[in-house]
Length: 449
Ligand code: NAD
Image 1 (spheres, rainbow, N blue to C red):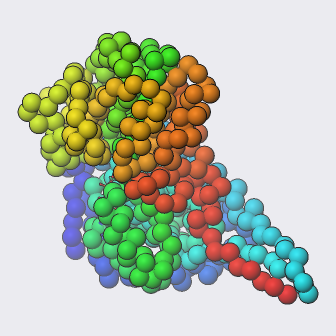
Image 2 (image 1 turned 180 degrees about the vertical axis):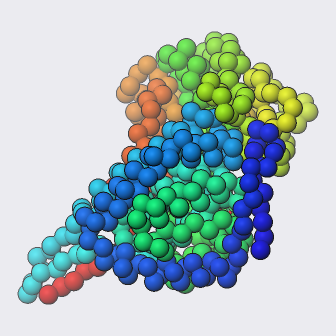
Image 3 (image 1 turned 60 degrees about the vertical axis):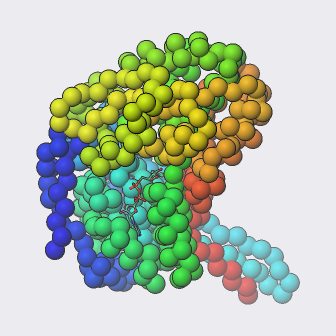
């Protein structure tokens, strides 16, 4: 049996060892999930709702434990990790309202009535990346369970600990065996088997565009439903009429949160040329003020990168001679640290400008006018998120309608995670959360009689 040692990214010390699941064990888990699905689907909607609320209560009672696991196993700052564990509870509570509201339609037709029913798709395979192990797990798991599906989930190799613990909490809360199974293991083994197994009727994949495209091709062989949440290279557009102080003070957090390991990182800052110098003067102290350090300390805003290999990958975007405008700080010594780094001016063909770095590296590019800003923002294969800063609400709204991206915030308005989200272009298909979330997990049956 393959063993995987989880390392603490802040200390490089082992946290624990996890046994990785084989392809045969994955098949056995899928068979258990298929067997459990008939009875889970038959649980009365009100009872399924109350089981999900008990599951939420179990998570709530273990927020500190889950947060500590995420600090140790993923290097997330403790404040962020607590929010993430609480978010799993909130997502379960949000979807606990749906089993009793899966209401179909009656359509009058000649000679009778057409009634539509919503039915679960069956067994759902959930494949999760390492950057947000808890939230992304919950966005697939909660709506799948609420709509009567059973779930086989595969956390990322590097970060299995919180998902495994949440799976245990589900059982402690009373969810029947086989309804939610968490299988730590390799993407090429467990993930691939979920994609290839004919009894898994839907895949929820979050990860890179490269693997997502292979997953989609694999799902095509079985006409399997698939939701893809993939990469991003989002623009943060700052117009000359914006509140520049606020735009500059918040821009570091739009890209350096989670050490930039965020698909929604606004990693291309576009600034109207007439205020570029002023913006950069305000941005520099804001970047240097980001508190980078021990993720277990309450005041830490940015922790380490996930692994040595990933740090090497991030550093490759900042070779010797790269146009570093300024940098923040990072600890010396053990840990996969990388300082917040601002690149300017960058060429339009610089990989740091065109590719998803997935680390604390941001580029700053000037633009002339509205049309130029929209053209530059859209000049990317990705379309996941974005930001607009302007003192003119009409302009901000007009620009938002023209930027081809799944989610945009204006003047830093916080995102409500209950709103549907997902990407355009190579950033994915399908939407999570909100009303769309549940629709992704249902079949629609039309009965005429
Ligand atoms: P990844 O694509 O390497 O891996 C994602 C998951 O897929 C992991 O669990 C991995 O084990 C599994 N996997 C790998 N090969 C597989 C295969 N052949 N079949 C099935 N599963 C397989 O991505 P990552 O490095 O873990 O995460 C970073 C990427 O995820 C970034 O590109 C980031 O933008 C993206 N991401 C997107 C969103 C979003 O909501 N759009 C959110 C978070 C992360």
